[in-house]
Image (cartoon, rainbow, N blue to C red; front, side, top):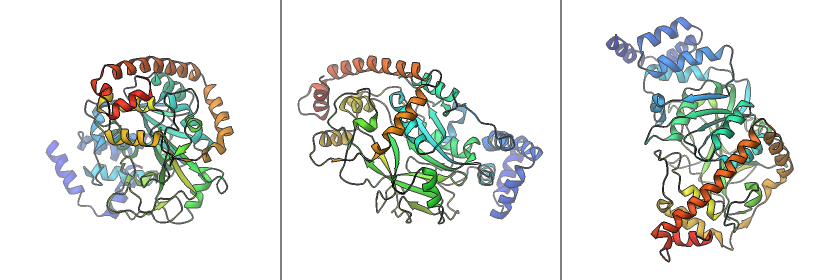
Length: 435
């Protein structure tokens, strides 16, 4: 009965940590115990679905190419994001996940909406670093990238998760909550790197041949997470999209290392994540290091590094691209914001628009071509991906849809009064693309 289940959950929360750890490990050895827990708490998603799913996977460890995250799981978006457990089964599930012994080293967790133009290059780049497992959550694509994601998943290059986001839901939080709180397959990798599709991890190639080598160096000391600082790249004077790699088109960066970080985390240790950093149980003693191997120092906000640096590893962040691509991106909502089908470019973030215009012709931008040391390997890996069944055809469809959307975007700019009002940021951006 529901009341009995609620009483059981309240009592179970009183267990000492060592008792809860023993129980969590025992659950993964007993299908009967997991089934009984589901019967006792049928409305608790961790008792009814997540723990049974973990138990089914942990034996055979079956791989998956396509998964679906339905609206019914929307509450995963915020469950645990503040470092608190919603129920005893939620806590036991987190503890049980920590007991799983990974058989692989590295995985990438990413969200992608309308990123078809950039997906193959981004994937190829990180494969050249030695990463083979990619969990890509995607939702509400209008650029043709669904077919591209499908082809890559069918070929085993990625695991695609269809992230069905309810109106006003947050795609990114929902994806991270599911991946780090409910998805069993990601536990087969010891480390998970949480990235966006405009972020490219880079290594000091004079020291490290692969990301696996780099993480082995980091693991020589106690470490549970590694924080990489951004290097923010600008437009390099480009006004329109052209069919060439992002890493070749944009070679000028802001002349400082950004304080923001993105993080690689021991997969089983994280209970959730925010866009820049993982969320841990506050009772856990965890060590986060920066890319140079020193302890990551920050104030209240863990996403903001007190001592940003580019030693050994960093992230090239291609957040601006060309003027046309910047305006196009401004017509989409951000992944950590409530879902909208389409936002007008008139509603663009003024701070980012000002940043774009200031850097576009700034003489202080610095040329940085370090990533191009891997250009040959990137071209080879891109070629291999393009030969996978259906990938080339899907990519052509993405480019065709992009051309149609570019025409529509120019029409929107021409018809929006704020783009015609002299002196506005929108007007200056519109002039760059000839609209």
